[in-house]
Image (cartoon, rainbow, N blue to C red; front, side, top):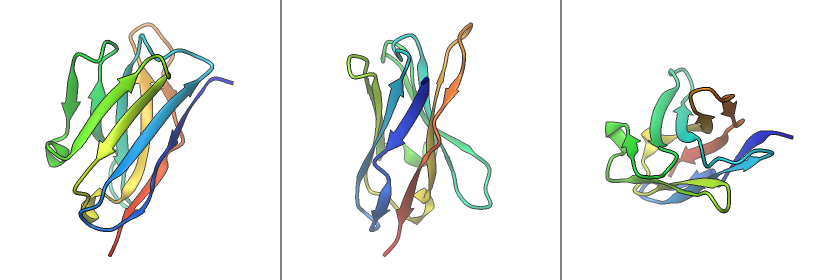
Length: 117
């Protein structure tokens, strides 16, 4: 079955860290740009970070720069989002997307991140 599966979410205190994983099943991620999005209750979905197929270029929304790091391991068919110094505004469902011109787009179902004291 072709899908993306996110994991690593959970409940964390402010200032804490989490590492999210996005694993591809049924296809290889190597030709794809992978993007992490998040959506908080009552808010629009927001692009958090992206990484190109080669891993040579990354992009972050301003609010997470210096705190979050996106990386990929094409051998493991996995993309990671290391999240440090988490705060309340980071609470959201985090989802990953695989996209590339001329290829199908794949979405995961998301993993919940809750920052609470």
